Amino acid sequence: EAAMCKWWGPKLACEIIHQCLLTHGHGGYASDYDFGQRYRDVMGLQIGDGTANIMKMIIGRQKIAQYRI
Image (cartoon, rainbow, N blue to C red; front, side, top):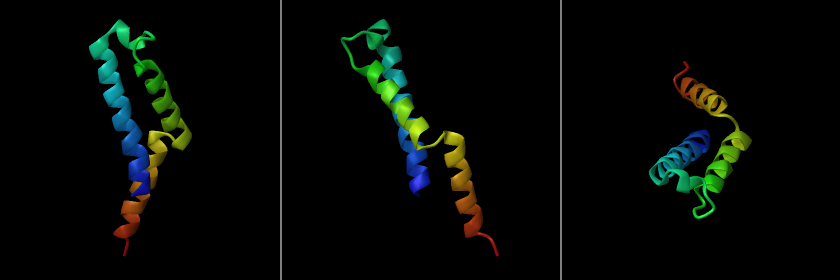
């Protein structure tokens, strides 16, 4: 479950911030809003916690181990 949270949380945050940037257009990158900095922070969090592919591999191994005879 921890791997699922580490994968899904930053992924969802990245998608939401990306939508905010698209909604605000150029202003999203300007210093008027903090979306640009938040996007960089979330991307750093995704990389620092392990890439999405690694988290998916961990989740897959855990699920397979549950049903192994």
